[in-house]
Length: 344
Image 1 (cartoon, helix red, strand yellow):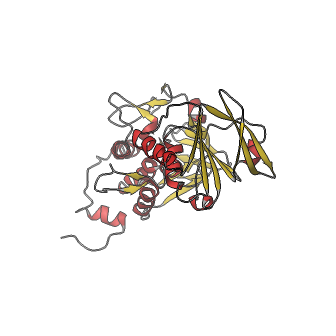
Image 2 (cartoon, helix red, strand yellow):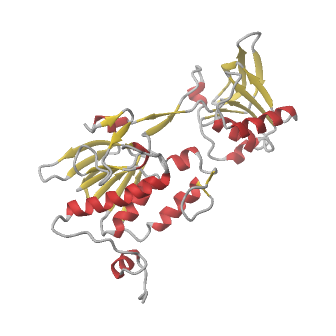
Image 3 (tube, helix red, strand yellow):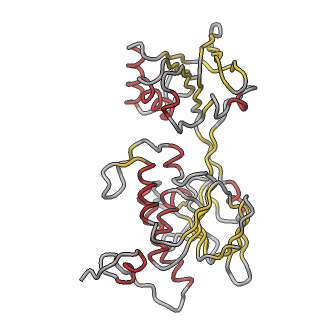
């Protein structure tokens, strides 16, 4: 059993920043995430795409933001448990919580913060007989290493931002790219659609619309070709070394839906003072929560994490007034951050 002050469910930017805010107040945290690397949506969906609305950072990628927050929380004593899903949350007689993960780890804590984004993301799979055996070998739902596609024949399925972003990114790296979309119109940003159409006009990529994949040919996990069936006319067979599938991601609350919280569709209702759920000492920050005026922005999640930390501190130490101390001048904060020297 691992004892701590707070268990944070979710290792995205808001969950990691929650560790920082708790640490400033002298509280220890353990972070659990079902994804196998920290960063949440930032590293899963857009690790290389720029973010422009983080205060004081004109531009950074999702991966750079994650790396920066991990650096920021280094002074604090926290645990990071990745590739594990929280399955059991039980309130004890002393008002603490016992928590168990899919890996069998057990935790005891005084408060819980849910920072799970919109739940666990699962790519919408392509439903073809041999797709599963090719997954992560030559059939991909995410791009983790763009360099592996250099000089290869690619077929990209989808019509949203992810599909077109990777078309544009890989156009000058791959030997050949064929884009297949089941509709005539695209759901991507207009600028991306215009860039893609120009690549088609220049003969850099091929485009097949109003069509869908009907078969994958290959063996031992390696695709050799993909059969494309248009709505009208005969099927065509396209050579391929890799198939990239971008049918979107389906968010699922997972076990959180069974925690008897006040659920608002796929979000959790909270107050705007403590960002506490309907269950005392269980808080929710970031995209997973809902309240009047809620905006799903990372910077809003940072604000929510700060107020949640103060509320948790006050509940854990009800006889002490929790004062706001500034990291620029407070010796206590400097000690917790490992900053030496007297600022005066």
